[in-house]
Length: 340
Image (cartoon, rainbow, N blue to C red; front, side, top):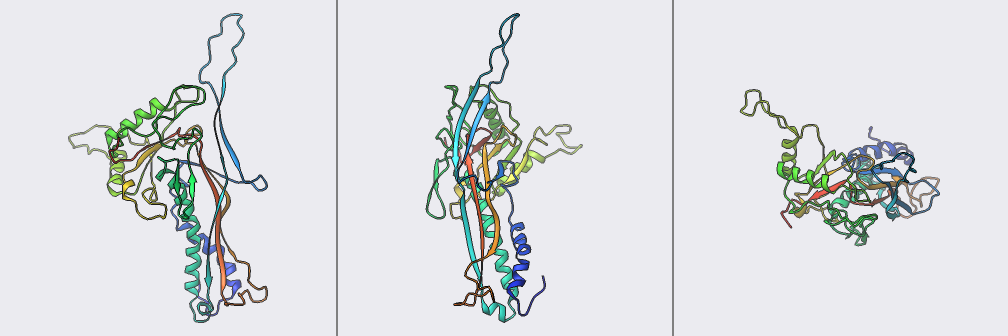
């Protein structure tokens, strides 16, 4: 982008979309593109709440003897969650001095940074559903208590989730919370096979195709070894097949091991888990009510686009979204800390 000695407001407005795109592209869309979350858009004019519900039909047909009436299939409503979007915003100013003294690049850098702020917050909010997924609420960066329980009133990751049509319970947090290893991965696979149920208490067959980890170096390397390791033809283990090869997409989630402010939280560094991206799998939903964007703030005069009192130009980055977990099905977690 060319440096302008005397930039005008129209220069920045004309280029703000390019600058915003550059800023947003610098945000790693780890959670957004992971497959863990089902993403959508919040349609205009549809109110500020949205309801998510499960409706399930039993898994198996029943025998029909000659002349017998066909038995009606059972339909069961599952849990319901209602959610509203939350809006986020930040603003920056482009000073008279920046414009006057050939500091246009500083203005560009500020707008690029503004583009990152909204995208970063969206990414952190998504990942914090996993970070705080063993609780039913958490305190946000703004100091507000945000409820994040599932439709059964339990945390996303819990040892005894309930069903609406059966007294059976299921768990999706691994007992004893081992660190990621071949044994730990197999134990979680076994847990998922035995605890993935519909609301009738019947076994569901889901493809858990995502292995996610934090950005902890040891855990990352373990994941890569588990998924990618092979033996040389001349090696002692010649001919041994890596049973995990091609089984999972590995997703790194860098904000999981952070606190509400986005600072490092080493107590969560060993978190890892499995998720299913299938339609009946992960029931984590996020809808954008306002896509991240940058606009010129009000208060700018139409004649020279300057704030009368300060001579500053103001730009605002904003976005709005909802995030909700309906049930725990399709997601499983180990905290990796060895806790019971």
